[in-house]
Image 1: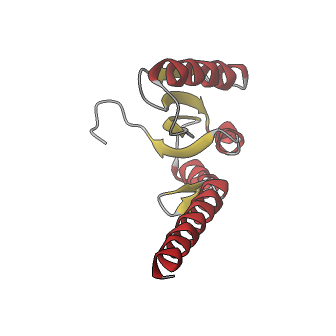
Image 2 (image 1 turned 120 degrees about the horizontal axis):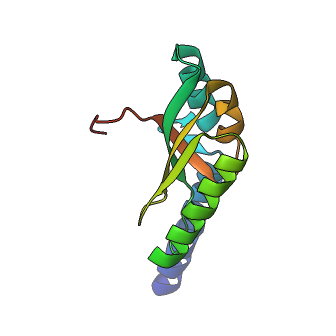
Length: 126
C-alpha cells in the first residue's frame, strides 16, 4: 500500500506542476510581467519613433535545431509583413532582433508566439 501511495503522490505532483507550467505559459510572462506590460513601458520610455527589441519566441521542448531555425525565420517574415523595418532571426535560438515603429510594439507583443521582449541596444551585453 505504501508504494501505491508514493506513486499516486508523485503522479499528482507531476500533474500539478505541468498544469501550473501551462498556466504560466498561457499568461505569456516575461520576467514576472506580461509581454504587453513590457511593450507599454518600452513605448513610453522611447524618445525615438523606432525601437530595437530582442523578441523571445515560445519554444517546445521537443523542437530540434532545424525546426527552431525554421520557426524563427517564419516569425521574422511575419514581423516584417506586419511593419518591422528589420527582423533577423538568431540561428539556433528562439530569438529575433526586430526594429519596429514604437507604436506597433504592443501589436508585436500580442502575437501568440511571442514569449518575451526586451530592449536591444547594439553593442551592449545582455
